[in-house]
Length: 122
Length: 308
Image 1 (cartoon, one colour):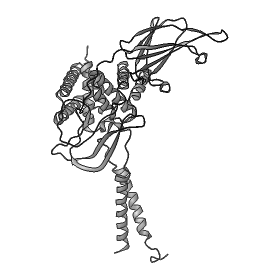
Image 2 (cartoon, chains in turn orange, brown; image 1 turned 135 degrees about the horizontal axis):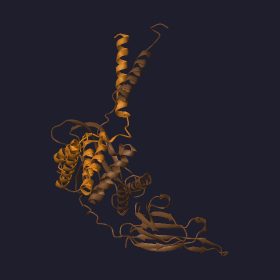
Image 3 (cartoon, chains in turn orange, brown; image 1 turned 120 degrees about the vertical axis):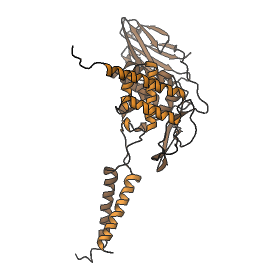
């Protein structure tokens, strides 16, 4: 076997050791993460928390602000995803009802905002 | 140096070069997945927002079991003090008063949970097919039939600490499993704690004149305790004088105890103090003390409140 082939094999072994060390022995330790990277179940539970607060406050603007915590995407989509998830895993009926109430509230709020004329000429 | 005299060192060079390339790939080019993270890894400001959401949800539902389970996800040694500290900070920084109050209330309610009861999550993230029923508290992951997603197996179990407060410890198995993304659900605890009703208002247990010239200020020292005599952080105190009022919370000076708060009075002013919701109103004024040599100075009060 030529020296170059042995050298190549040595490099491959080194890469293997490096990957093992970097992925298994001492992988990148994530701290200071952002909420959009939260696991789906935690995200759904956060939406449920917003729904629980909304049930008392009935303030969709506040709820939308809280849902922005999860990355600032479409709040309706965020709630819809949480409802689908909650239905799949069997959240209680009362929790599902809270999520649906939040969805309806935010939907009405979003519709009201879209219906508001923007910069209408006098 | 001839080729024959170089020896096998080139192999070691190759391994080292490969190792460096592997590390570069594993740490920089394609590091471990930055998805499916856990709330305890959130940046501190996001943790604050998460904690606030827990407190607001608790304010709406009064479900202490669920609040404890959620707080446990943040893996904090002392969730009650974290809540109290955040409440104080929110007040000082001008955040929503309702949020600060919710944080303080949850902190106070948590402070009243008997020390023997778990104050952190019983969040066992298990892979099981257990059906989920209504209730709250055990966080559980479930596999679903078909999708294939790599997720670590995670188990969180409560564990006692030196202070007797259980905290969560986790064991993470890096081995990927062919299951669906774990799901956070709430299943009932074997003995579910009833949703707490509003605690009875605090009543004054002790009022003592404090004549200590070294204190300097005419202080009202307030100590709020639970039935076990432990200080309760986050209890709202409202003090009125003249046309003014001030709100503050116990626990601001942890070195004095979690149930401690104080307020500096101005002489010749009448104050009315209210502890918690519906608590007993106490009228106060700055007392005058006299020293051994007959010198006069302003004293203070030490008030101890507890549930009846």
